[in-house]
Figure 1: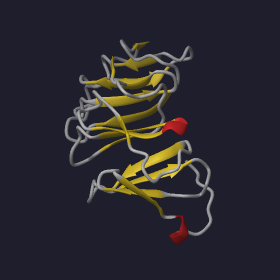
Figure 2: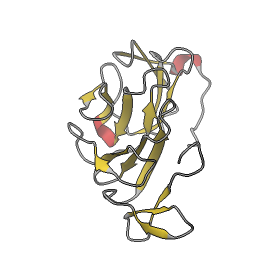
Figure 3: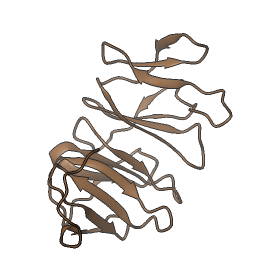
Figure 4: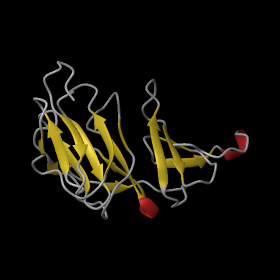
Length: 171
């Protein structure tokens, strides 16, 4: 996952462990553990920095394009699903954790804090950050047909459901 074409590609193997391919051969990815990989995100300003989330162990970070991984889940309660990196400030990372809601890191995933003020605790299925205004974040919780918008970098959340037609999200 390197824009120069020389980086590793990472995936989950049958046993739930991370795996990588650099030369056409799959090998275990050192440090990437925790079951099913639920999301991957690449730092838009530093493409060798990659984040992965797993069902059981939370967030992992690689600073070398996916060759080696370290746990980056301090403050997260277990497995994590969707992940998003602020495109303008890539040390800001958001991660969703089942019914525990949304979490934010301002230090490149070293530490996490809850960002659920005003948002339901439904399992968040998708996250998106406005590329033109990264203080606006969008979250799709559960299968409710609702979309929440976070302003002030996720400090305040409001439902946009009243402005949308009824729909069933496909993620």
